[in-house]
Image (tube, rainbow, N blue to C red; front, side, top):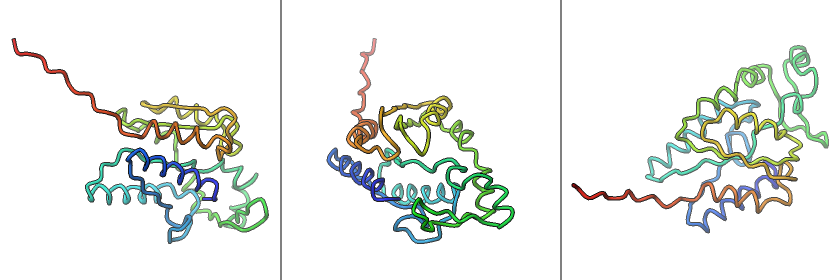
Length: 200
């Protein structure tokens, strides 16, 4: 995760701490400061990583009230380029480089098959109605179009969608609005006391 995206989550963690909510931040295996090898499209393994973190804190008797993340990736063609299927069939892999031409990671045919077989929209439909979901998306997101957020919003049962007008993928200039929306959604709400009815 680049420093600008990292800053977004650091700022949110600080805002949560100010509201009396502890936050734990981590990188998936092979990402950021975590050990292990990065693998493209490794959704199932990352879900296992997340499950392990949740299980650990549950065992430590923490009350887990929210999970927060920023994006996942841009479209496959946007990341791997045109004709990626033909190229990976020919060479067995595709090396992904950043805009400066620096090598970032290698996509193997196996990892690409895993990514292509993952139906995130279908998975979103299986989210329980009792699970509240918040999506905050920038209207000017150059990496993941806002229409994707609208599509998922139509399939997730208990879902709040906020489109931040003018915000890009990194919410440049809109960081405070992003933090405020997330904080309002996450911070504990006072429990409603049930009214006591007199016995007749």
